[in-house]
Length: 366
Ligand SMILES: NC(=O)c1ccc[n+]([C@@H]2O[C@H](COP(=O)([O-])OP(=O)(O)OC[C@H]3O[C@@H](n4cnc5c(N)ncnc54)[C@H](O)[C@@H]3O)[C@@H](O)[C@H]2O)c1
Ligand SMILES: O=C(O)C(=O)C[C@]1(C(=O)O)C=C[C@@H](O)C=C1
Image 1 (cartoon, rainbow, N blue to C red):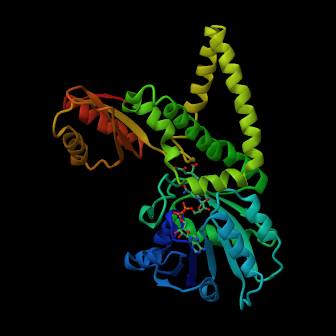
Image 2: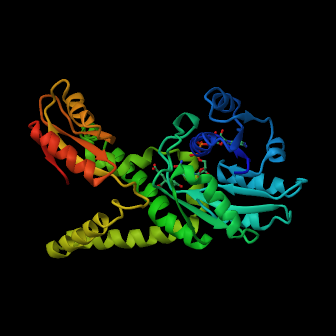
Image 3: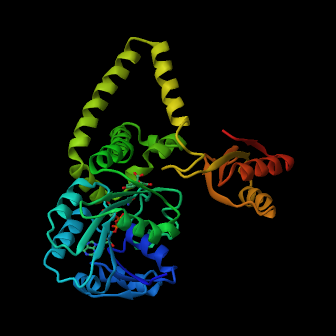
């Protein structure tokens, strides 16, 4: 296998995760650069990169493949800088920006024949940002979307897919319009609504200060993403502005419709509305490859007794069943609550259910 030198620009959540993942590959060297000197130091000290450079130009001169993992405006300005660079060989450049149209337009304006641009977007992330939140397995089971530029051919996309195979993502090629519309609906717009829900609760805070103590599972689940990085999301909303405006109009219309159902006491219609939403949500591809990782959940009723968490995990671990996630749901002092345990396979889920039940726990699957 030929040796590849990878240059990652921007070592935050996404760039750091890509670097960490690729860094384990003995056939490649990962060079890093970040505008923040502390981030670059952290990346070196924690072996997230093999080598650091002091400028974009220096990294480009050493690289076979460049990953731009910076905010969009900065990504665009780096792409523009490539125009003037004297490159000795073909350079594959990819990015990770959440909105593709502005990036692809900038890439298409390049006349430097040595640059081959393939837009990229790993559909996984977090509400956290920065290098400290980076994880080598961040993209596992997630879709990784490619939007090839006009000079890119299949061979370039498959080179990237091969390189990124260790991320265990699912690679799909899409066109730019479809990308921005689909991610607008399924990723960007929900962030706007999550923020709006938080604002609604906040506006009630003065009259009902106790309200935020009551924010339990449902509110927390639906608003987690409102804790995301405001600067990044502000950028995303403006870059995908046309899609956002159109979705907001649809949403306002939808809310008016819901209001009329509630006002006119249309019980059956509202029930059908909720039923249809449940059916679509339940049908999302959770148990196969998909944007939502394949987790198989168990809900375990427990009492707020010291050690309940460690006992449950111990029972499962004894049989070497690995738990991919644990969430404590609504545990209040002296009152029973629940643990949500997530497993990677249906077999593990069933096995853990049987073990816990035989140890006297009440366990449900949904
Ligand atoms: N956060 C997510 O969930 C997510 C998921 C997929 C894609 N993305 C996209 O990934 C990109 C990065 O997002 P992130 O979440 O990793 O953000 P982040 O804030 O964690 O990382 C951005 C990094 O870029 C660095 N940077 C800023 N200006 C720079 C410059 N001029 N030169 C070099 N480095 C510079 C910052 O210091 C930081 O380390 C964005 O374009 C975003 O749309 C984010
Ligand atoms: O998991 C999260 O917190 C995310 O918001 C990740 C998420 C998403 O909306 O799914 C956010 C932005 C991206 O461009 C891709 C993924």
